[in-house]
Length: 350
Ligand code: SF4
Image (cartoon, rainbow, N blue to C red; front, side, top):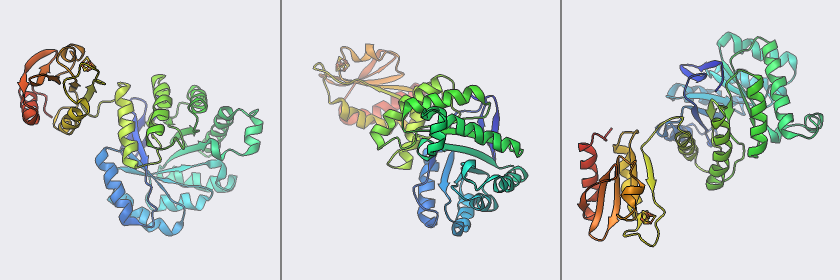
């Protein structure tokens, strides 16, 4: 993780702070009511930083409103016009995502930088493979990862020259390999926190798999201080996926761990059905709990001996077990109640 900490309001990022989970609103700022509905869903899901596109100065009032009503920090996403970045800061935004290279030249970048320093605003430098110019790609010998990291480096230096030091860096591609290479280089060169993720990762299932590969490798190597799983789908799915990636890596714990067997010819019950029954009960349990759903009593309790509480199919009904030891058998229709009462006894409720 990065050596440097930065803050957006009270939200600490980098250093010893937890890896943060981000998403971005799909709704245009012009529709403030729909924006608020989407934002509330993200807040409930546990999103810690929400980015919103700010493409038009006419939406400044709505941006201001969104910021004042939000319980999470808002980052304005700006392209091509430094006046939009200034407008977002004037609207009360404490963080902006820009590409300093397209802010209209040195004079305009200096004007923006002076305001950023004065208002203690955080700047995320966001470079995407898709927005590299052909000359940037040529200069890097057609190596996209190198072109991305060179571009980010130039932009960091341009901001530093203007006295800006509250920086998060980000270099994204839709390719996990290119993203890994670019970020590995940037992490070795700079101490600033890194926002990690793929861009245009794809529709939900494909996007989650690609993002898990990329983020798993980066975070496993200690690179990445804030993440976004970018999906063509619901923003709340990005947050769920981000949290589950962090939990699978053992970096953060958000919810009980659910393990379930794939089922085989020995199964005594429809395991998928059993999972559907147990999964809604997890919100009642402490996040530290591990729950197992297994298809048979022959192997299930032994295979899931590490689980704090588990259920398995038997010819006589559903067996409950804890740490591999049987805790009795109940009828399917009594399972939810029996499961929760055992959890209560075992001190597993939240
Ligand atoms: S727990 Fe039983 S049903 Fe599930 S995979 Fe193992 S042996 Fe098969």
